[in-house]
Image 1 (cartoon, rainbow, N blue to C red):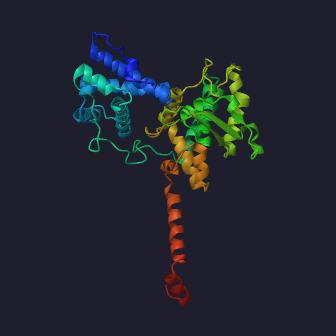
Image 2: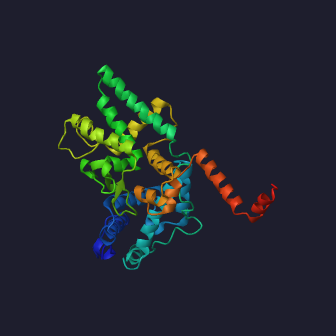
Length: 372
């Protein structure tokens, strides 16, 4: 069985440093259990292992000596000294909980190994009193918000103006600015994550039989969408619904991208040296333009994705359709992305008030009698 103690430790062999050897065997067995038994992604498994190693270094104790007090002290240290987010703390606790479940599962035999070698064994260290529950649907920074329509337009206009100035002056950078302009319009126009935009290839653009007017730009196939619980990337198709964004993307693919000179490279967004534009570079480019415009620091490329959801909801697009477009499994997640403008909220409020009066029999009687 993947991760069983008898497969990780050689029976009867004297270990020079038994504590370290057993801990390493535990981590190796847990890794194999997740990879082979549960089919998780290697990056997910490695990330969880690093959490356990960090916790062990903090406590300077081995898992069979860990107590609830250790987890309480670590959580307090992460909050007070390192200012870790709530979601980060919960993820750390989740990794430790899974590791302890693995050690305590009699199927894998680690309790017997610890009793035989150390005279003690692991015990549960997380309970209802110290476990950070997922009490709210959204645990990101309170300052994170969609960009307003005015901010989006300001960003796009600013980069377009930069392109014009560089072309007129014959300066380098016009090609990069043109790419950036189209990139951020694409993130907004199709509601993409920065990582999803980075992973796009030219072949991921294709026709949508329901929208022939967009040609080969009627659909974007996202092959590197965010996975769930270490399952790896998911795929989804995103229909094109903004004609101006389609026009900008087509112009880039036909007239701008070929100027990079790397015709055989599959990536949609290229660097000057012929590489794929990475997520970190997208974030850095956005930060450059944000600072030039004096926009709030909390705005990041992901805010354009929030804007896509919010603005389409405001424009009356079916929320279920938007949910599918952005790849949310649950409608509640899409709702968290939505922060409608004051004008929209006021309009909806007035409609609700009007509807309430229309449905009020007493109000209708007063109106018929001429009294208000």
